[in-house]
Image (cartoon, rainbow, N blue to C red; front, side, top):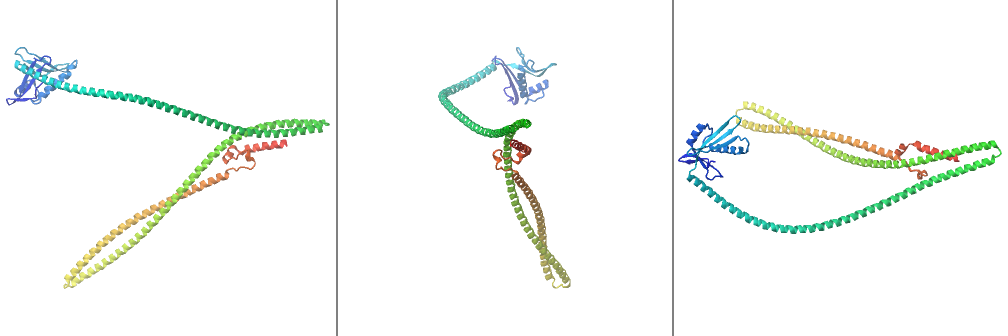
Length: 499
């Protein structure tokens, strides 16, 4: 590898290249190339680089050879042919391909003399000694550092061991506390579960007692009805016996009475069947009663929702009325401002008329002054002064007139904008009135619905309320009036038959 890119020797730049072998310290090949030698080398081997770029390119070729050295078929190869005796050695950089081996560079090296080899070996020994001393110093520093680290590690190990023992003890205590808290919580959960279970059992017992009482009341009612039917049946049997004893002498009447008895028995069976049907109808009505209670609860919830909606609509109606009031006040203020602006506009128009009259008078005066100037040459200077003053006053009046015109234009623009705002506020007021009317209609409709629902709600009768609870309009529509009519007709027929 080159010792330096290039250095001066005798006023010329020279490139020194030295080849060595790490395994053979006595192997030394040298090459010195000056600018003149490089010129002939460049012409001979058709090189495209100059002397300044040659060392870098030579190093790149050697690095490329070193990268390709591990490949099976390297693309770049550095070949060294050692010379014997006075013949020099040759280093060639060859690019290999399937067609041809291309030699990019060929350099001739000369074997080093004894003095050169000794100097090279001395430099190597010097470098090794320096490296040895450096490595010994590094080894000493490393040994001291490692000893310090071993001491720190032993101290940290001791501390960590103590910390580990403390953590183990804390862990055992913590696990004991956790186990104790878990057992306490488990016992609490068991107690709570047992309490809930007892409460559920008590509730179930209460419900059971209530249901038993209810069913016992129903059984009592049915037994009363059965006893009344039995008494009526006994009355009928007594009547039949009286009729049989009375009409024993008459067979025909006796047969008729027997026939009537059989008819009464058949009717009794029919009445028993009707009794069973009435009991089934009663159970059906009780079941439907429960469903109607649920429907009534949902209806009451709906009524509450409607009442809340009505309250919200009334609140929004009040807000809309307040907003309409505020908008009307704002509209009145804008109208008063519009009136003031109209008055200012009229005043400005009057001022403009006065200014025009003044201008016309001044123009007339100017014409009269000009005629007087033509007639009177004596008072020319005084007339000119008077004209200058009047011209200044005319200019001032014209400026005032311009300012008044601009003010009038601004006032007109403000009037237009205020008129637009007034129109927009009027539209908003109309919209607010429409919204208020819509909300009023909605509130009236909701009040009407609530009144209708309140009117259509059933009332509790005086005597029959103990047997059957009241039904709402929805329940009566659901079950139908025909069921109740049929049940009442059946009961009335039973009463007529037994009477």
